[in-house]
Image (cartoon, rainbow, N blue to C red; front, side, top):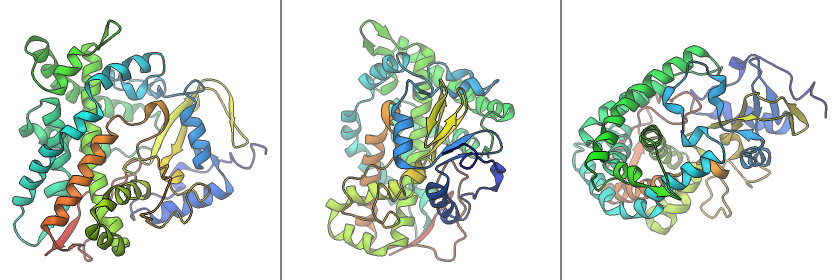
Length: 398
């Protein structure tokens, strides 16, 4: 295959957006998987659409670097040592240290507290109509991760402000200096806030995740203050944004396939498979970026060294080559190799916590309300990709 066909350019803005809830974008992604599995947009960015190709790119960390900040001059000064933006061997060291503090057991141990916080939020709901995002889906993840980190829950509006500024940025060209400046400003404010807690814990440790990150040690290595701040900021953002969107997305999926909610209510053991399918159908993050370290070929297309490569996780999750009947929420789907939490060495450390939060919250919402219906008259407003979720979700309950 020559480069002329698959890499023909068109204005990046010509591709569909997610504003309508994703329908038009999903149709476009399906067409691209079939006809143009690697596409070069007008900014020179390469987009990869098929599950197998994305698995290859995200597995081969030696050929495809995660350090995209080299393309964003003037960007975030708190990015140095960030787990998301580093490659081995530095990434391996960081992940070992952070994993020592932030363990799957920590997530499972939080179940009783997640239940308490969810019940507290449910008890504050007055009436049979409310915004699910405002009342539950947004505050719960913030409260959980803030409590884990040992950061005051009453500061959660600060977290929301920083997160909202970041997700509101409309990014066509990731190398845009102005975008880098705005991202850097929001991250700087959050980093400075978290840094005060890191310094406090070095003097007076507590029983919280920040203190455990401060104390973590592997083979004589410890995390620097900057690395702890970056880790905490990543957890705050990921814990807030992705878990919030996942819970709202669950009820959109149940709206589209009401038989699923009935089945889950009758058999709570199906909550896990249902949530995995929600993550596949509406992943909170639609893309993941990489940079080739050398010229490489993907799906017959040559990608130059140092070019930006966007892996469409959303597209991979609908790839008919991997998932039979991909547009259906299938409670029996096995295996379910969805990419909502990424793939390879950068697989999301917070995945166990997100799964626990989602399942606990859904279980308690079902216990509290016999019926939850998305308001059919509500005009839903979606975040721009690479986020996939609603800003608010009016529901009616009984």
